[in-house]
Image (cartoon, rainbow, N blue to C red; front, top):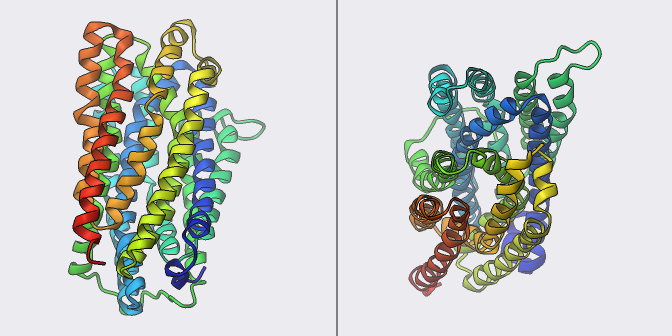
Length: 445
């Protein structure tokens, strides 16, 4: 899609056209994360727990890449909205350089911190060894992940929503095919277990990276070339100024997961399993909403650069309605089908007795979570990254962790009430701050 249409096409079909490929591709991503865990759970309960403990690190990696992508998406879309193609090219290339720096960060974790990380959360040598193996592979070979993100965000900012869908979809399909082969080793293939799951993930990411580079070469109105490229400190600083708060916001999910694992295990030994299963199931809801916001962010940023107040408001309202509708589906599923959902991961009797009411408590906060996520994306697109960070900090640290501990002291089952409490209060705060931001930033457009 020509990027100029982001400023003239009717907002509802425009948002759907931008968002649905990302929503579909992220659903595929969520599917292979779920299938990955289901395959590993068939190996042993220890293997599933190892991946559950490793999951926050993967969430952190995604958070860093998403944060860099928010900066790249917002700044590149704004330059395109201003009609400055040369500056837009510089932003895109510096964004790729920033993603290479992200990879070096993840590689450092693989070399220095994978073993200490697992040792901090478990004393079981089987779980610790499996988790270290998995983390070392997925972090140390994550260059495919970082550069896949870079290509997706450039294509999306240029008005191409199908390219990112193809990139993620192809990578996910490769992962899905390789998972059972590398984990269980049918026929001539060796059974690699947890290491096989990690290798399948990495190979899927490398495939996505390759497809992404091929699609970038096809850009015509916005050709990219490394000839004469030099990193620019001012551009990198601007990308980081926008992206670091977004990365910090996204990484709060890792902080929340780590904190809840520690807190809830004090009151219920099956809590780590329940949390691990819930976060895998939640990805089916949060991934489509993330796809929606990935389509929304460049549109709001473009129209902010083009000074179109009416279109920004219309886009925001429609995105809020879509986010609430997606989360409403999740609410129904968690309320009426908690047992079968937990059964996907081989939940035993203790986990089911605690997990079924837990999922039902959590369900009541999902719609508010969707609204907050959309509003945070709007804040980022408008350059109010610190506001977005504050909302996420409120949701995922300030409210939920103390509430979980205090409610657990009263009665262990009540600690799951911390989820809807945190979501409702943070959503109300986000709505209030949106009104304030609207008057401050857009009243003169």
